[in-house]
Each structure stands twice: as structure tokens, then as C-alpha cells.
Length: 152
Ligand SMILES: [Cu+2]
Image (cartoon, rainbow, N blue to C red):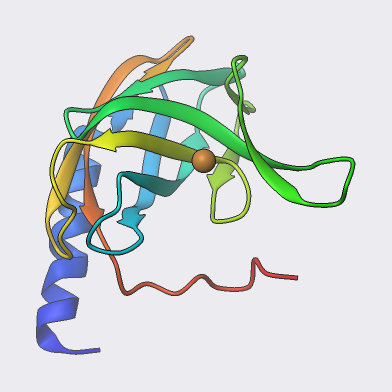
């Protein structure tokens, strides 16, 4: 790991830990990516921890970085093709548990990007939880990150 990357990683953690703990909810390892320079859409992934005694639920998301942000998941359609679907009920984060947003699974979908996403920049993201309420974080854009172990 280069010095720059180490610094970026430390800075990222500091940014998140300063703004992402509320009502027992903690966000970790958040990153966002889009595909190609002309991308009109992007996605964000993260670990959501619930350190409280009650189940919580991520019910909506918004960001200045896109016209619309939705809670998405991947489901296999009847013809065996993986398709993305909006999840209106949101993502359950069980008490003293966690919910992972990762590529090919549950994720946050940004539609209508307001500017081109550039590696190393950060985008603001507002997460709304049923119990914990509103949590604002900065998510770093990482166009180089390879997914680890989620492909079958
Ligand atoms: Cu999606």
C-alpha cells in the first residue's frame, strides 16, 4: 500500500467515524463507483452496523450527487438473469447485527449523476433510518476497487 493510499484510507475512516454514528448505527467501509466517463448512474456500498437493542431499517437515501438515489437489490428473474430491483421496504439492520451493501447484492443506486464521478473525490450522502433518523456521511469515490469474494 502506498503512503498516499494509507493516508487516504485513514482520512476516509476519520471522515466517516466523525459523522456516521447516531442512534447506535455505524457506517463503515463506504465507497462509491460508476462505470466509465459517460456514466449516468453510479452505486455505493458499505457496512451498516446496528449497536442498539432494537432492529432498525434503512428506509431512504438522497444525495446532491444524483437526481435520485434508490435502495436496490439484485434478484434472479424467471429467465435466470440477474436484475436490479428497487426495495421500497428498505434494508433491515438487526439489533446488534449488521447489513452489508455490496456489489451484486443490496446497494444504493444513484440515477442521473449531477457531475462526473472522479476517483478520490467524495460525495455527500444522507441516510434515513427508521429509528436512528438521519445520518449524513461523505462517501469516497473509488473507481479502482475490485470486489472481494462476492462473485460466484
Ligand atoms: Cu442498482
